[in-house]
Image 1 (tube, rainbow, N blue to C red):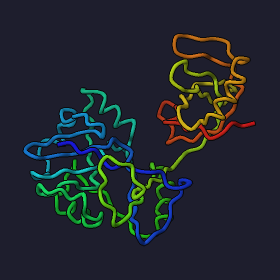
Image 2 (cartoon, one colour; image 1 turned 45 degrees about the horizontal axis):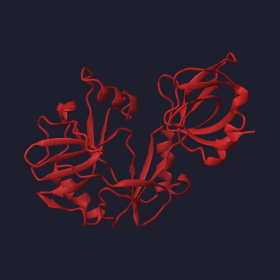
Image 3 (tube, rainbow, N blue to C red; image 1 turned 120 degrees about the vertical axis):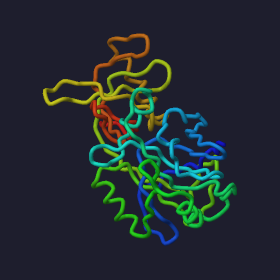
Length: 280
């Protein structure tokens, strides 16, 4: 049985805050997964794609009793034990890839066949604790109470993705983006050159300068640009264009911009970069 998961809002100004009404959890850098067991284990992405066959280690000997539906994140960890998003994607996209995964549960939707979404979060946490015994492939997220700002500093120091702050009394609001859950992302900031644009869907090609003064591709900026930014860009792009192919128009890399990104990939690309502003 699939349940469309509850979604997060960004915290105001992407800042953590201390509150007696909230807890904090690590934001795991993986793929959102609903683990459902009525008669048999079924695994669903947040978009209702059945991916049970992709993760046999989450099916065999799963410690999940019948009548249970869990919400969480499936992750791959690197040699330091940190979530590795690229490793997770590689595992997800290749049937030959056998890198082991771990499902980290942070909420429970059904317990012993009963819908528990209307219960307060902390009561659901108690039920989650009772719902299964942790194993190599099934874990529960650790809850942090108080000093959220200090916790976020530690998360940043370790280069982790961020945290989620949740109201203790919040209900589970399926298929809704709620302010009861707020995420704070550990953004990395960078300065790039805009070296082209995509012809169809919006996207600016980003390049960075190497140590020898050359420009190399660094990804595509798809988020963050306002209509005002796009209008300003369109006003000058024609003067800088020099080549095009089926999908892109290429420009002299003279326009500089600030971006924020989740992190850098192993291939030196920006991961999900967000435009911040032009550098004048």
